[in-house]
Image (cartoon, rainbow, N blue to C red; front, side, top):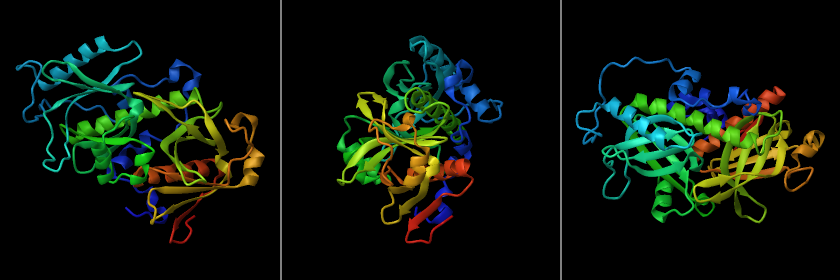
Length: 368
């Protein structure tokens, strides 16, 4: 989708429905347990303003579904599995949701889904479980997830994830589905698509995982990067295009007042962000720019004068320099993430300054 003027604010139907649950943080998790993330599906949906639904007594049906016992109804299977999983998890990990899903296959010979299985979502991981035995097939950290998007007009979600060792076929699939080929050498990104029983289960799962990921990273960044009294707002794993023409993996962390350029350390199943190279006050932004010719790039311009006025010792970063460079080029994974980054930068700039941040798409007039 080409981006012109205010079109960058447009998103898919699912994103518009869930956007209110993902942005505009006003509470910090630094202030004690009273503001820690909710540890139940019902609590998360209630906080998100989703009304409690009454069961209609209709059992969802998936072809070839195998249950723990032949006579056990669908919802009883998931309830029984939740009890079993809670006994296996660490004390600080809680089951949020259990759903029957099937992974959609994308091969040259077939795009059909595999046999249904159970997807368990906790506050720290997501787990594949065999429905007939209850055995764990694999368990992956939520921190490995780059993004979760809803596929329109389908009960399917698309999970883009980081993998330290990823087969070329998995990376090529992600590129064929609209991913940025420039990042193949910088970020090892794979994609999985999970088909839920119906649209409502998909919608609930999207709300719960979106809020859980946000809360997980808020706790992480407010304990390591974001300075008091700031509040985490948004982050994005991307590449920074340096002066030598190379792409370096970074994470851009936005608080309600500052932008942090964080460094990333990856080990198998774990991502650490413990320091940042530099920080820029949001009020020092001058313009954000995109290009239809380079749809995965975002350019940010900064005022050195305002930077100098607002810089303090707390925000020097690991480079220990008073000023970051006035122009920065970032490379994101797809056009959706470009839209999200531009939206967040403009939203936060307006919150701080009361003015609209200049936005320009190369080839179109400047947009206020």
